[in-house]
Length: 328
Image (cartoon, rainbow, N blue to C red):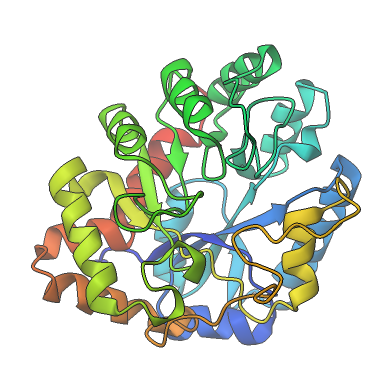
């Protein structure tokens, strides 16, 4: 049978549940990269893996653990969703480079070198001074390249991101962000970064998290898809995908954990504010996994070709997984 191009969401941090897994199936989502760590230690991250193992055991008709690109095809063939693991912070490797390979053996396929702050590896986008990759950072990038864990710079500052692109011998990813030229959020990426990323074979996943959208919650599907079409003109559609940053059903206490972790006694509002401290409402055209087809239709309406739309909706990530998840 001829398989359609896959739907892949390359970043979610929802409050996962059987209901959300059923929505993934209803939306035809073949693979999702899920965040299993923000500020967790290695042991705390393992507890999150245990929870996923229980879900895989309880819902084998809906989801299974993905570790290779072939699992995306298996998901399509069996009518399920492959779940791929990633970290939004290098906290789980602590100060131990040997844990990179251990985490890869546990199924982790993406790791951000920073969240919003300075880490042992690189500088986050909220710091005043961006000193680039640290000595450990350069070693960890090399080790990630060796074992097949993708370097993700979604929350990293400019110089650090450029150095990661340059230092990595394999293409890296920015799994969930948008161009700064469309919406000037601290987390969105400059044209210089996006050109360097894509010229090196890397991938950008477009985010629908309202703080990253022009117009926020009120951003229209036409505006979003027009931006994607413009990015395709600038950088090549083959380097683009979706990474929604969907935080569905999460309580506001979780956005506090994401921003504050254990590093601060005072509340840090990130891209929010004291008057808008919680999760912002999603745009009306993307509430959950059942709305992926809205994006697909919007991209076609924006004038992108069928082949380019198939790529952006998942085929490009699938190709990237194939190149990035195994040993060098």
